[in-house]
Length: 212
Image (cartoon, rainbow, N blue to C red; front, top):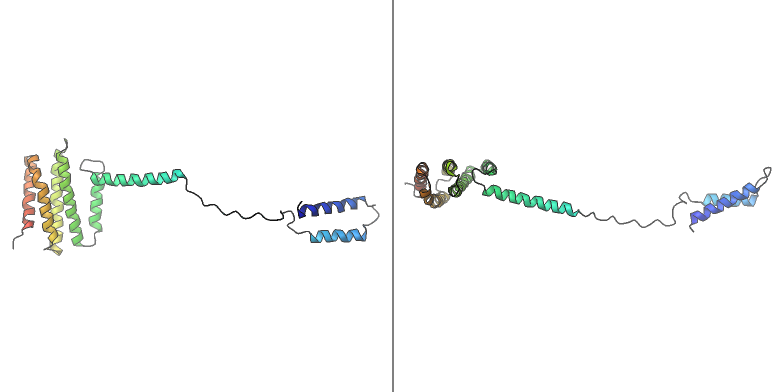
């Protein structure tokens, strides 16, 4: 039995004794002193338990399994979407996003040389896209557009590099790589597309061995 409960019972006993007294008389001095002592010594927090329970250490909240799976699924989805965007070709839903990302990289480049190299990377990407479109049944009209975009990116990138690094070995290496990509496509192009590709090859051939 707790101390608080024992105190309450003692006080109740004293009150019972008071009720038994005659109305005209007062309580016994000894009883009155004993009651005073009991009331004074009663602690203000007497109704609380004798010993406070030990404070429980807060448990570390665990992330729900569903939340973890959702996060992993979102990350995987973003990776798949990024890969699909990178692999897209003209006519695909994600292709405009791919071109927008390339343009952003060019604009965010720190100097002219880097911008030029970014544009040459875009020209390489257009050559790869032409190769993929040639194997598609509906790639005809898109091939001409992609060949034109390839030449525009090439000329813009070369002009930037020649202004700041006219003898950069990257120019010659780019021209050699592009020639190896474009020349095998000639037999698969129609007459108009062959004219586009031939003009492009003539242009980059001058970059491989520029006149002195």
